Structure formats: C-alpha cells, structure tokens
Image (cartoon, rainbow, N blue to C red; front, side):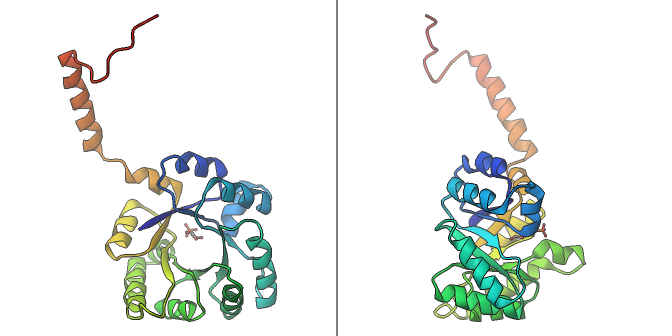
Length: 225
Ligand code: E4P
C-alpha cells in the first residue's frame, strides 16, 4: 500500500520525507488555508520536495472553470494530480482533464455508487472519506470494503486507485491495508503514531542496558586526538 501525507505544511512534509516512506501528498482547500500561504507557492514547494503525486484541489464549482483551474494547477509541476469534487461538474471536468493526460483525484466520496461513477469518468484516484463517515456513526471502513470489491470485478476496465482519506488513527491504516486499498493518505500525526509501541521502547531499553553491562562495542571506539 502506498502512503501519501495529508498536509500542506512543507516543514512537516520535508521532515517526514527523510524517512523514505512517503509516496505522495494530498492537499485540500482547508489544508492550504491552514498554512496561511499562497496556494501556488506552497504547491510548487511540495512538488519540489516529493517525487510522487501531489493532489491539488480546484475550487470552482462548474465544469468549465474546474477544467481551467485544473490546467493551471497541472502546469505547476509534472507530479500534480488535479483534485475535483464528486459532483456532475466534477465528473465532467475529470473526463476532460483525463483526456488531456492529466491525473485526476475525485474527492469527497461517501458512497459506493459515487465511486462507480468516478471510475466511469476515468478517475486516477477515488478518495473515500472514512473518518467523516465514522463521525456520523456510519461505518467508514465498509465503504472501502465495498469499493475495493466493486473495482476488483473489473480489473481490465477500471484503472482507478482507491485512496483512503479522512484517516483518524493507525487502525484505519491497518484495516485499509487488510482490504487491499491502493493508497492511504495519513495526517502526519497518524504516521508518527504508527511506529509507537510501549513494548518496543521497553524492549530496546532493556537490550541497551544489558549490552552496556558487557562493556563491549560493535564499532571500534574513536581514538581521541
Ligand atoms: C484528503 O484528500 C482529504 O482531503 C482529507 O483526508 C480529509 O480529511 P479530514 O476529514 O480529516 O478533513
């Protein structure tokens, strides 16, 4: 499963990119607003820091304006993926942008029927928002289960990757991986939480303590000049 990072904060992206674990970035208008910085400047920096796909969302609501915005966003860098909402205009824009060779992420997906439409429109990625469904007492992970199952029925015609979005905690990532989702986009906090386990910390402390008592070193100690 690929890992995208769900933030527009360039410092966080750079900090986490050094792990070598990031395959891409997703942004949305709210995440851009949170930076308090100009959209094009932020996106250019992110595209320079990450080789993989970087989702940049349109803010127009009619298809013609979405296509124009999408073309402008796509011109920022080769790794831009234009993000459009799951509306009729968004799907029309998706088809038009895909016809020009631009990668498109169809976002704000909350139902399997919507995901079928996005695939028909040629979406490169579909973004089902699981956390927001959980928030209203619906089963977000069931949406992923349904979409993965549907898309798998058409391996030769559907080329849309399932990009699990609105992730709230590491269990979401584990469950999405068990279902075979193609990508998960993680808030930086969730990525950091994934490595934590108290027994890892306790075990490492005990190993180092016991090793210290042997007085040995694996590398030769540096000789002071
Ligand atoms: C990603 O593409 C989405 O914009 C994001 O995951 C939404 O997450 P939220 O529900 O935490 O805002």
